[in-house]
Image 1 (cartoon, helix red, strand yellow):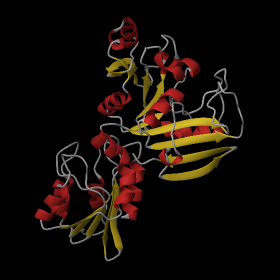
Image 2 (cartoon, rainbow, N blue to C red; image 1 turned 90 degrees about the horizontal axis):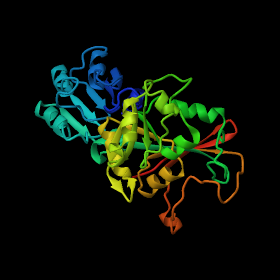
Image 3 (cartoon, helix red, strand yellow; image 1 turned 90 degrees about the vertical axis):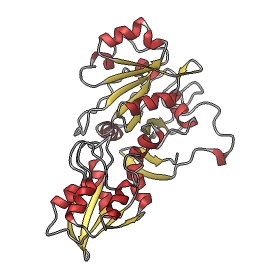
Image 4 (cartoon, rainbow, N blue to C red; image 1 turned 180 degrees about the horizontal axis):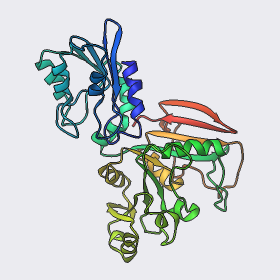
Length: 359
């Protein structure tokens, strides 16, 4: 099962919005075949493993990181292939949270006389499948927050200068992230301050990410990089329902930008509704590169699943210089947001804290 879960990760950035799944077929300690879901619309892991079997899979044990599907989608039901191959046992790490599948795959296999075991290494499989589960169960993307800061926690100087706090090594990691997520989101303040392009550059491209801007007042300039390059990547502005009907919205639509109205909360775009809108557009993994306003809102609502925080060996200082998180903050240490897992690595002179958070 550990091998099946490791194989599943190879599909990252290519299979979404489908889940990453890996599969291993073995008999008497010997691996007969293995596979993983390589791309959206392609054959599922179980079918790939069966096709690559060295010998007959009849009576063998199949280890799969997610419950085999029992419905028609882009491909036929996987359980039909397992039943036809007459495998003897299927070990499933995690049941599929999709209502179209959940439990039906296991039930169908057992009905066909195949022994099924569930739950082996489930926590490990859940970590890999967290983005897929988020979109299915919570109707929102898996949120990856990224920012670069000084040692004293500043995102920029008091004048707004932030290029570059982090070094080339850190920026390469960010471009690799951009190259495998479904969407990259910033706030309108970041567009106004930095005029970002929000594309992956100088790295192998797994997918071309949608560019999303959270813009309650529709402040995005008529002339900026994301508008001028709208032909290079799908670009969506998430604004209030009122602004979505404005002349400015019509102008942006004529340029090729999608302007979508979301629910409003205290004159601002309702963040959960904005995330649900992105999920409806097929976004499974969302990289947020916004400033303090959007980062603070995400953390206050406990909507951050993963974080990449690059800390540079510099002190900026100044009470007017922006920090990553504002607002009231935690009243006690016990109530502070704490990572469930942390990995620390050097990126040249910078230090990266790669964290996961339990929602």
